[in-house]
Image (tube, rainbow, N blue to C red; front, top):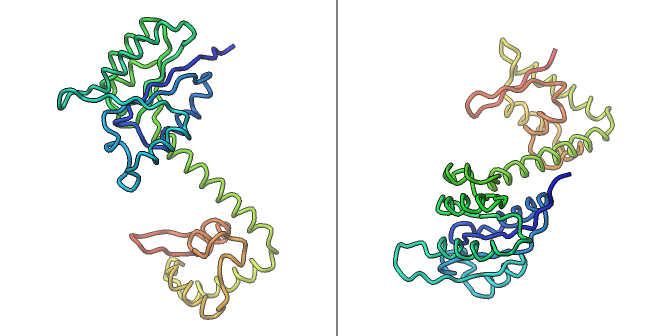
Length: 255
């Protein structure tokens, strides 16, 4: 049976403050156990929020919505990272809490690497969170590391794939007769404009198609938008081969 941890999340908010990153991080941590402490440490509120949101109310709203306790650490010396030192001190204090079995250190740099090493020596499970470019020493010293930006890219790609499948399924519900009529018309246009290899310029075929069938739109066949190239590549992929040279697409009838 997998261990369900009691997790303390300590965030270097000076460099890990993207709201999308934070939301995904907390979702990921649910797989490891219960997050019982969420603390974000920062040295200057105005360096951690976008220009259009530089108000205390926006910052407070963000902290409340994510359930984070903000911790301001004033820097006493320029160019010294007081935030990292404060995080280390707080982590040492939390070591006395036996019910905390896991620490999540969220940072995009490697300054918390010594802290990760120390926490592991105290038999704590350490989860690191950052971005793909976070230095390797920090990643290696964590028991597990979450590349947040990579996760977001993968999630977006998965959603796009699911949306495309829904578009294809919706298009398949439309009568085959309408698709066949369209294919017959497009085939004739390709035959009229093809080169010696059987390919015709895609944009030229579509331009003529729209002149001969003025109401033509991929939306008429269940596609989500009016973009013709994605429509041909997905809904009509069994009928046509499409190749791209530079910025120009060419279409050929599949034999």
